[in-house]
Image (cartoon, rainbow, N blue to C red):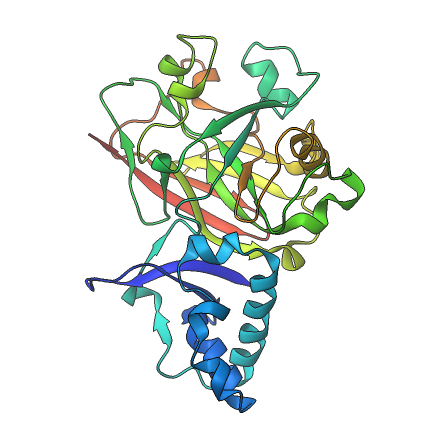
Length: 310
């Protein structure tokens, strides 16, 4: 199931949770209401906001228990009418799936070939840093390139969404704590990133980091350790790899991070980027106004954004 955050274009409304079905967006709460009515559970259908909140951040913060309800609504919608709460993609605007996650944890230098191209040793332990929600944008937003940086770079990354509280998790159990997966473009202002030992200032500029276009539930992705991942800029392939080349795979990362930080439902982890970034090219190729960056991850889809100077 592909879960999205959407609102109807040119209508003053907040983003709501929906899911994709036959190339259309189905409102999740309304689909669940129809499911309850079909079971003659009318009392429950009148109190839906408590059962299934429409706000994307609140929905994902409730974790896998609401993902399970969403799957019930999805199953119902596949075999019943969705008239009245089904929208064509041209009618709606997609946001980043979780607009304000409590934590955005990123992993640096997690592909050996990328570490080499950055003239760095392969790390002994995961290199962790943070982003904040001010940086997040959706699949239909532009990547803002501000005058503060002249060296904005792209980074294709498989992104993990946590589905239940995780503290001191063993890697053998780690996949049970995942709600789903999405795509991230960990854009990096290389000139700002490298001017101090800490990377934060180059990693979380306003409206710079696309995540989306949807969250694919973990059951549909299966093994996250063997997914092709690639990026293009203006149609030219820049990165092409596979998550089987991660130095620290996803179960290891969840074990490692959850022994340092308690992960909560709705937290996201950007798991690292393969080689082929712009700063490592000869000569370096940084993003400029009008560039179109597309990230593709197998079983998840494509995330495409245009760069716009500010």
